[in-house]
Length: 162
Image (cartoon, rainbow, N blue to C red):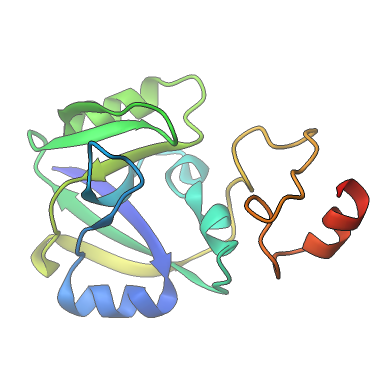
């Protein structure tokens, strides 16, 4: 059985440990509801790459919800904002390990995860990228859609580039 991690706030992590993971609306029109996850691979940074991006929403502590699904279960796999492929959970783990640059990689599971499948919930350290993979050496966009009010150094970025 393939092991995945869903990253959420600490408060939601405690709730999920008691009641399981439910699906959420996605930004993809062909996948209306799913659970966002990443396969757990030997590289800790790759498996937990979304922590920093999700912390931008204002959460201080993030939790990792680790769960197993059957290897032959069908999931959607791809990079953030790209087309996703329909494949088995085991193939998704292999695909992530084969990728030359797996930053931005995500798996969408189109069903809820019961508490019986959850292995553990734990607080995660601060890792990952910010804004998007390879954001270093690119000028940040100061528009209100890209740079929300109250984000880290948002006022300074708006003054410099706005």
